[in-house]
Amino acid sequence: MTGTLLGAYRPGRTPLHRAPAGAKLLGFLVVGGVVVALRGPAGALALLAAAVATCAWARTGLRATLGALRGVLVMAVLLAAYQAWQHGWPLAVESVGDLLTLVLLATVLTTTTPVDEVLDAIAAGLRPLRRVGVDPEQVALAFSLMIRAIPTTLEIAGETRDAALARGLERDPRARLTPMVIRVVAHARATGDALHARGIGDD
Image 1 (cartoon, rainbow, N blue to C red):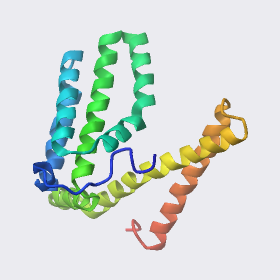
Image 2: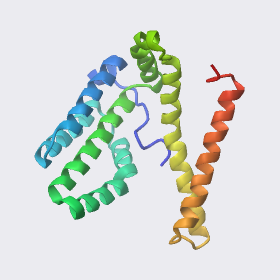
Image 3: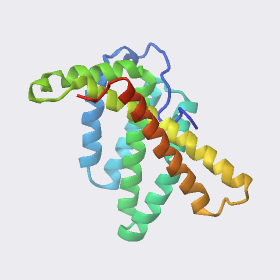
């Protein structure tokens, strides 16, 4: 599962590959705002269809697209069941449609843009805010750490699940959650220690 949540960069010659990272990031942020603001299952399904068409236009690849959806499939099913139970099917369709649309848009961004270009675009976009105390490089570093933490967390979750299965404890939530949480926290502390050793974030 590692590296498949949002897709890995795939070189290509589509218009989305040639577009500047900053323009794509801004465009996807705007569309993401529309996804969140638009209400109703019909609008959610229309945006989901547009996101699928964008994936085809960007040639993200069937494997990368299915890999991104597989990473959130369990969450989508649980979300749909909860929303249908608490608020009815229209809101369940809207919630799941919005979730899948955002995941597909993120997949398009990550498969058509190298991560370094995305981080450079974030740092450049935040540079005017340096006057009010915002450090663009620190914010870009935070985004970088967050992006790298996602596949690491998924890998730890997979290893913890396999260990629980090997011990015949697949139905014991403590055998799956407790080691995972401990390892994730330990990884976060190790990352923080490594940054501190390099003097990053001390000022």
